[in-house]
Length: 137
Image (cartoon, rainbow, N blue to C red; front, side):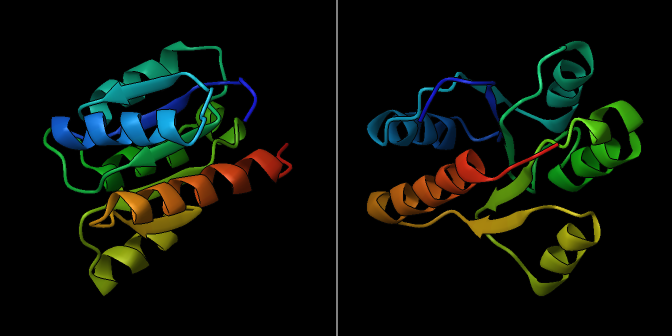
């Protein structure tokens, strides 16, 4: 993968952040990866940067501002919406109601955090490869 704009990962679990960083390194991700512990900090960054992130991966359940609230804020902000930043959920659990709500908020994917390193690698490789090849405005 070539270096372009940063990948934003929003997840309040420090262990998951560490694991995702290690997996990204292992699969050869060269984008800068920016971690945020909650949606509020991620939103503050998104509103202050001139960069267009490569991708936003967000957990659903977080304190202060959860993933749904973050997605809603991005969707309702004309400037952020026009950046066409791919947004996917990467969460430990997904009820049918959560998946419906996510797609109602026009996310581009909802993935479960797998239990094995190999499966996490496969999921992240697939997500990053797809968005590397996908044309965007």
